[in-house]
Image 1 (cartoon, rainbow, N blue to C red):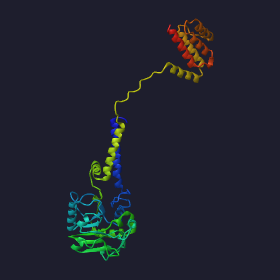
Image 2 (cartoon, rainbow, N blue to C red):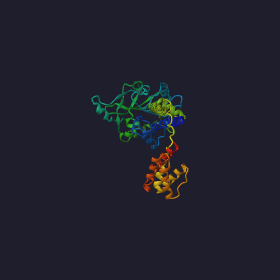
Image 3 (spheres, rainbow, N blue to C red):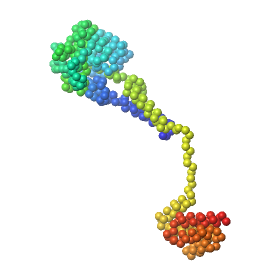
Image 4 (tube, rainbow, N blue to C red):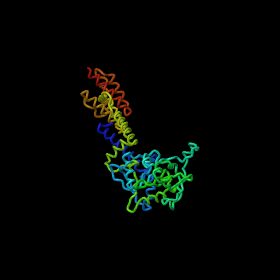
Length: 394
């Protein structure tokens, strides 16, 4: 597995690549599982198409990436688009105070969002009670038509509403609430009303404004008209992306730590990184004493002879090898090496008749030598070694 430093670098690299991959995925807005209606998102559930539509129609728009408190002061008009993260109580107080002081809020509701109560609104479902569960899943919502209201002039029907505002909402009790779009049963789905010196324009459902439905729902023209009406000359429409999970500023390290600490995907990435690090360490950890290396084993003389014999066979020099073996035998017995075939034969005869010992080994050498070019060099060398061993023992 390499050194400990190499393993640590590998773990760090895997963790960094994993975190960056997870962080970069939501920011691209292309993740099919991300249902946040963010203007950063190009996927089906995002609202980037609406943001680009406003830009093309000349409505100044930008994104707000800070909280309502301890951040940039609220300046409007402000768009709060079905927030994925509900504002905190302190933020809701600041938001309501800003509206009452003359601010304009374009709010798109989300069931369960605490902003609804702050604005004095409540939602009721439009799906019929008699509809079966499977049909509810496929249900595309109700169509609303424009009411006699200045914000609905020159607009057409808007499709896809699954929720409406309850006429028992607190906003109705406090004062006049005007319906801008109504269903055929007169349920208000888009309303406008005053709150202090400011005003609120509220949509009951974000579905008609999402990328996948915006072209066919008819909501683009209606929302653009309301946005243009809310933005006075010199004003910029600000889309709240802070409560969609996006934050302003900070170093990459701080952003990464916040992602790992606060986001479910970040915590999952941290756990996977920890498991991967443990697996790498376990794979490279040495349990017990190291196994000693095998002792070095020298080659036997016969192995060298076998290798040399193979080399001589491939070179076609078998006769030369035979003469060298016989010359080495003569030299080790204290005799001069033979210079020709006659001297070779005489040497072999003397070995077989005059040596006091090793006559059987000498006979084996002479028999193998007599095979000429067909002699096995390995066998001949082995017989020579056996003869020398018997001679040295005397």
